[in-house]
Image 1 (cartoon, rainbow, N blue to C red):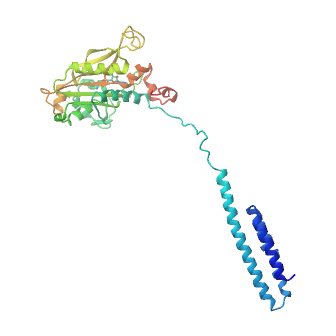
Image 2 (image 1 turned 90 degrees about the horizontal axis):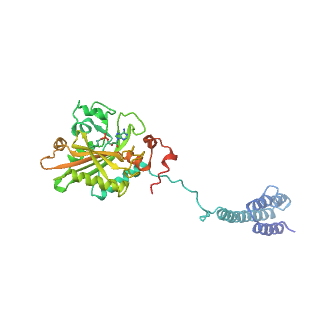
Image 3 (image 1 turned 180 degrees about the vertical axis):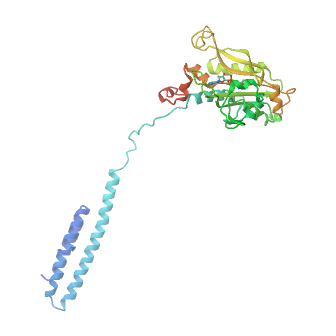
Length: 347
Ligand code: FA5
């Protein structure tokens, strides 16, 4: 058999093997065996030294041609096998979207946020706007504009943390009254607002006191506003918060920024007024401070007390939450214990 015939036969045989190769490993094996240094083509080329000078270049170029053809064929097959392998991997790794997912642990809003939003909703329903105040406040708005001039003895009831002589963290949400009143345009209608937020006092923490707690301020100013409006409004809120058969009672009290001033009690939601441990056997639970806006407060905000009058109240949602859920220590709200907080699902 001539060298050319041998090469041709070798080519046919190798092409058949390449076509039959099942994977990249087998293909590589064919490449090494056929085209490698110890392979048959190299062998043929080595045998060329015995050929005549005339035949040598012919056989040489034929052998090179065959080597190039086989190399190209192997390359082609390699691409084909690689694609098949990728397809197999993709099929094997496809995601089964019907498998149940990992359950995400869902949190709940803080119980105090829930209570405050519930109260906000009640007042929004009565046409109030919700106003945001600033936790850092000036002495001017926190005290002076609330009819508590410097050295007024009633300041002792609300000592706080001072940032400078004039800047403090607010002791109550009442400064929002002054800030809202001075901006209000009565030609656009009466002023009706509530303002929830955090307040701070230098109080010693105990079961019912925290140095940081919450208040919701309420304020209505218009012509002919009376105590009857205050009582009616608070009654609506208490019934919505604690049930339709709740009653409220107003007791005389004192705040420098309201005159007259009252403390408001709600009939005990647990015993209905008969007396129990929740209401300390009085039948009533104290829930907020309120009163008619003091003429000085109106005047300082540029409102004529001869023409306008108003009522205001300040309620402690922490205490409301304690009463509603029978929580006996206010500090529970601030300790971030998920076993406690997770109980209030907010349905
Ligand atoms: C005031 O702060 C007045 N600004 C409320 C007010 C507004 C009266 C408008 C009249 C008109 P007082 O200090 O009583 O009032 O606080 C109001 C409510 O905040 C209390 O009824 C109580 O529910 C809550 N509160 C007061 N101190 C604490 C405290 N240390 N921890 C938790 N709640 C408190």
